[in-house]
Image 1 (cartoon, one colour):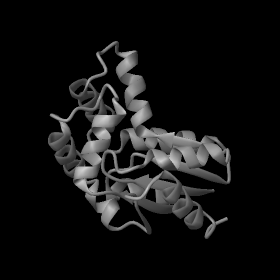
Image 2 (cartoon, one colour; image 1 turned 30 degrees about the vertical axis):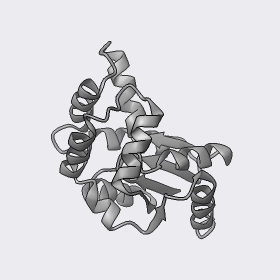
Image 3 (spheres, helix red, strand yellow; image 1 turned 60 degrees about the horizontal axis):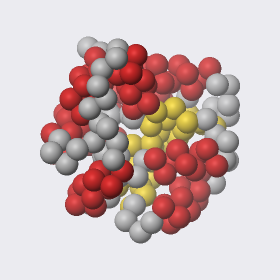
Length: 175
């Protein structure tokens, strides 16, 4: 199995990888989806505060609980190629690489552009007021390390089609 681990700060464009994977019928596993599902399961209001709280709960004491869950689901899929999003530490990358071949792809975008995207996408767990604290929480999780040490980068400033083409060119190196 080849697993493409998608990393990046909030609103950097990671969902482009989801759109790409779905267009190619490649399974896509996102820890954020699991967090949002747990918020719903606990019947909490899906706001930034509750999402952050549940995210921390699911990450567990070692910070890798939700990644273990996503990796387990990915491995059960029995597909030769899968995408996984939500990796936020070097330890999580190492965990994945102990189990499957893994390529880390970082989506990056300037801070101002990411904030504009947060304002436009209108997700219930997004807010301009929480943008800085969310960024700092991601950094505290260790998200900057997998971004810094990624195997590939997609500078997502031009448009979705360009980023999709960049991603396709990367994937073609491995299939």
